[in-house]
Length: 450
Ligand SMILES: *Cc1c(COP(=O)(O)O)cnc(C)c1O
Image (cartoon, rainbow, N blue to C red):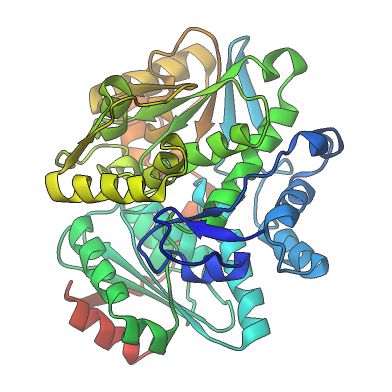
């Protein structure tokens, strides 16, 4: 299997190259040259344990890894989850299920992809001998999951930028209390956007990028999307037969990465009925699905901070298919959006998708209502999935454990939400570094440590 760029201006590459590069050199995102048809495999796969299913799925995509190596990578990636099912399903009532994606080491769904990505990097470094420097910017969960996926990996040095004082204290502890020598959490004076802008500029310096072996771990990395496909498959197999073919997956969304993974699984022939894109008050995707216009707006910080995003980077992958795999059209759309802050689709084909928007007041209401009705606590991101749906059967992806957001939970239901792995962190030493949010300062810091 080879991988092409959504912008069509670079040759197809191998799986390992696509993973190592993250972003394609033409600025596009990698996708498989052809999406495989999974239908012939579904019978054999339906009874597999999670890691075995993941291995079978990646066997189709990671064709330049040998089977034994792939097995080692995958097996290692799901050992730090605290539930035997890895991605268990909870039934709330006849029409409502929850897919719990928060049983990994940092209690958010991003662990599914970043545990695997860390092991893929390690395997690659063992083969090539080339060291990797990972640079990322985070508003909370990505940084923590990346750090826990990469800590202690031989040959990897990790730098994560985050806005000082603007992420939750527990999220900061998840990044800064690891004790790992190859991890550098960098607190910057400024916003998440400042961190992200500085990071992008560092990536544009190709000479520096080559010198330190720079790689990206944000959700544009294809390995992350593929790793997330697996829990849709797993959920499909584990749902009761009478629900399976008649259920909508509801996905709390920011960058469109998570829901894209499910949609790709559907395109590969798995008979998933449809998806609801559940946004918070930062609703660029909800507005798009309602009006056909993708229009930038200012980010308004919410109680579901990991969805405080107004440019959904993975949406480019969806556009590629929606526009009939026309890379020139993708370039035109991205250019227009960059220049004017919006793009209106003429015939926006979004069959199978619906959308919803939930503001902070509604999130608090929902956390309370779900708790009263089912005795089940949802985190503020997951709560967005419980807003008014279509009325049919739904399975809501629970993207984070409520204990990561204790203040919001306490305010909504008057209860403490705790988790042992977070309690342990409260006794550990915080190690963080302070840098200016400029590309020069970041490069100097990195250069001195790789
Ligand atoms: C990252 C994140 C999201 C958004 O996921 P996308 O792939 O960006 O759509 C939702 N909830 C939580 C808890 C997250 O960490």
